[in-house]
Image 1 (cartoon, helix red, strand yellow):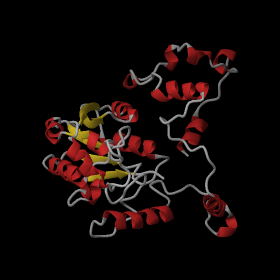
Image 2 (cartoon, helix red, strand yellow):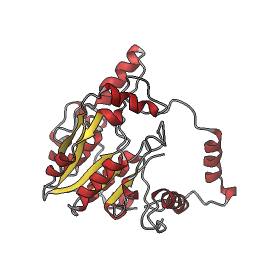
Image 3 (cartoon, helix red, strand yellow):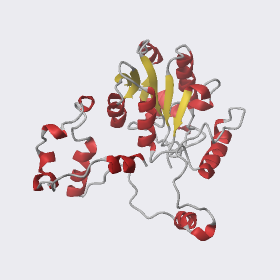
Length: 298
């Protein structure tokens, strides 16, 4: 590997490293040798997870802010993992995986998205599917590959905090477009919406409580805009953009061909009423597959 060859070409030190270099005190009081790059200015502060997760643990609170599983995987997943690394299965798994995606996995994903997106052709697993270590890593790779100094990235506010940090880390500038609070419904409107099975009288759902002003979105686009991160179902509001809203967004993006839609759909399977409020993928809309990078998670 490149790292091993670099290590082999490095001359051996003429004397043992000092004890000071073997300690971690240099990190708690940074010396010039451990200064962060300028591109990380402002990104070295504690995140919301550093603050609230310890507090939830300290006071025994139910932590609704961090989505980590606290249960064992199902047995079929454990069995599949064991089979995949067992030499007797003939999988030859003790090797580096293909860098874009392990081909058997890429093929399954391509088949799944071919059915779900229904773009009129088969999705090619060798050129149109890539995997990463989690969606956060996939987003990081996408922004590093697409965004540079001077580029702007549109973000819906409120937004998952990673979007801001990763945009800045790539050298870009986040531009915020707020989700507005919808006007209070009339009593007649509220009663008309009670047809969905999950709603109760007097309850407003996130889909109705938050709206995106499409004119405001388009006004935020400039000749520097390179990407628009669309998150549906939306974190943290829970809003799921309707087909009408998605078609409105698509219409805007078609007028600005320099903008790529990065569609973060990690919550696509957490849907309470698939008939009344289905998840709509931007890439499934006419003419949008080629303009959209769809991010999902398992």
